[in-house]
Image (tube, rainbow, N blue to C red; front, top):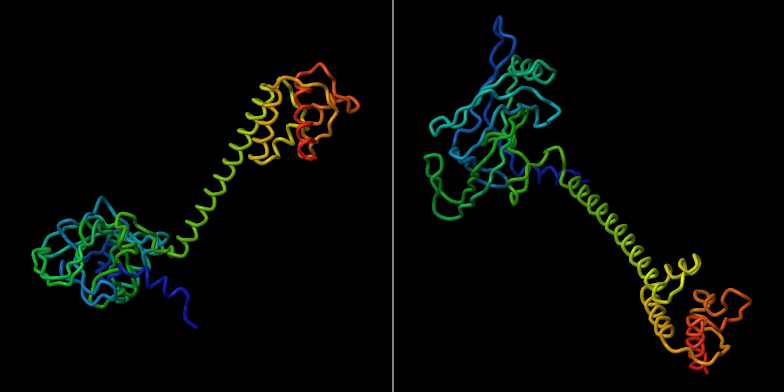
Length: 319
């Protein structure tokens, strides 16, 4: 059965390049810290890479700002040392020097090196752009390279690592996992693309839930304002029960009810009638017809008479 993580790992290794061996200096009397040095990149083409085939890092635009960490296997939790100085030129390429920490990871690198273990040096580099030259040739680092070749320009080195195994026998180090379509956004090599996708899904679900809550709050506030306005137009204060019923109506039902009540409230009162009440509005507005006393409507209220007219029209239409 194929390993489900194999595809994810292969995707992360698109930007992996093995460097040459790093030299860890022998311990010296009176010197507390162990030092290391090496050629991080020679300026030559990295060939036979499984994804890019042939890659060149533009030395003239490579960036190294301040002291950068030296890790073990590109894991931020395994800090082994730091780069103290570097130099860049077309003749020698990119040279780095640094010291190891006295913690378990720095000690592991030093002890294994003393036992002749061939540590590989890796570099995490984030290019600003990738120029894919498909025809002809291109001059980079004072050398001419024939197409096809991918040129990493504006590469910023964020860290170097001591690695037990390299990703390509003909190249120089693990050079960070990131999307070739978005070169300015570094990614954590310990986080798989699936984990990133799941995190993004969760983020969108949270935002969607927040928007739904905001929409409900806005709709509730809007309905309360509409009920208040209707009460003012009718000159009547609704009961708590009526307000609850009106809040539960959908938008079209509430709009229709409010429109009808405003129309009949504004019309001239007709002769007193004792009609039945349309069931659609009986529970919500029954108190307007009955006046809250035994089901008998008072005669002096213009609003009550308007409701009687509205109910009579409803009954007449049903015949």
